[in-house]
Length: 473
Image: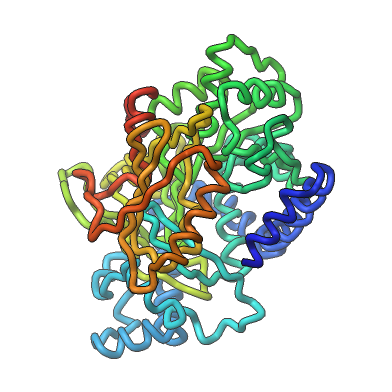
């Protein structure tokens, strides 16, 4: 209730005060992400960027050994697991030894989050978080400030490949509720002065409003764009359809993350901006990270994680299957052999023309989503935030059979009741307004795609209006 009250208070304030609150939140975020750990880690990553394959592997194995010992000695879940299974931490010398450790799944993280937290990290150093994932499964997470430093260091290693710098001003398209849904006139964005980013609302993208987005993006000064590809593609398509030329305002690069970068997204964004598009694959669990280089390959950040593939298909050149990840960055809640639920293809041999020797994911099939189309024409491409705090929802899927209606399919946990449903309803209304009819179906399971994944958003409306999906490599 306090969170809802704060949001209602924020929504009632004039834009000038909302700007101040956004910047205040930005300062807190900046302190957590860009402090001393970030600066130190980024320098180390810059030095190791072009390490040889042997150096990469030796460094990764050393980091793995350290994290295995930390988990086995300080984390209750792993202390019990290693004792019960008779696993000697010293027997795990490198990535090839990881199968000695049983996999960790999302259900275990959901049911026993405290047991996965290290005893050696004091409460004052913990930054709590949540993850909804692609399935709507909400997880309680515990992070250290150093873990955030690690995540942003790998992100900025990628950005520096494309010639941008930390102090550059940029346009951000994420899930933050910075503009009240009921607002009908621009600006549909708020400026975070602390981090130099203009936060564009992804919840106000009607065909009529997109002209205002395009006009703002034509103003020089946005060195790069960053965010959900579905939202950036909507603005890009408007720019193309109306023959708008960005000229000197064109971004130097566009960085996408948090959902699948589809082929038609990439084409629209590249055609509208003339900029290279660089994708990132990562999770709120801080267990995996892969960055797309200028040559188009997804390089696994071996300083941050180790990746295994549970094979579905395999040839001499590649293996395709579920991503199993082990993270090195987060000592508060280390994940060893975590089943991500994502499907990817790992190249077995060969390097990259960019000169980097880290292993390559050729294709990432996870997190494919459609848009939800509201009655007034808004297209909202990311709604997983609705389930961030819904710990009594095991899985969820949003299905849109018509422009006037969505169906929320819920696989409940024991605590799901009318109160929990009303909480979901409030979160939906904040993002889609009051005109869209919402109904709820409690189901035992949600059908998967042939890849083993299911769509978080499945829309008959969007499927009829947008181009067919395709996965960019």
